[in-house]
Length: 117
Image (cartoon, rainbow, N blue to C red):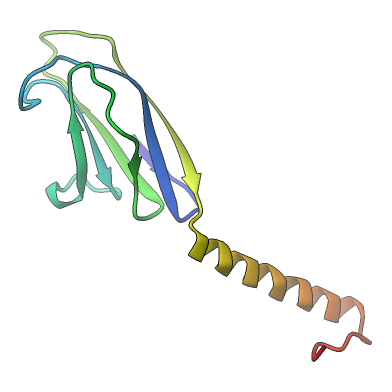
């Protein structure tokens, strides 16, 4: 499952994790990748067992969640939710963009508006 949003970062929350437990998660696992590709350097975590992992934050607007299963021992599975977040720096950029758009609209509709004030 790839999650993509028009935001700065994503938060993935594991509401439930119930996957075959094995010390190295060799048989069944859920892996979370920062970005859209399944690359070792982008893997944020690999989880198995019944202990709910901590929330995962992406560094950008894409995150990949991959379930790997060998189909021999079944368990309850997992449940994740995600939310988008805007950091303070991104929020400031959005505010400046909004103010610019508002200023342009005022200038268009009110030709007597003095932008220098």
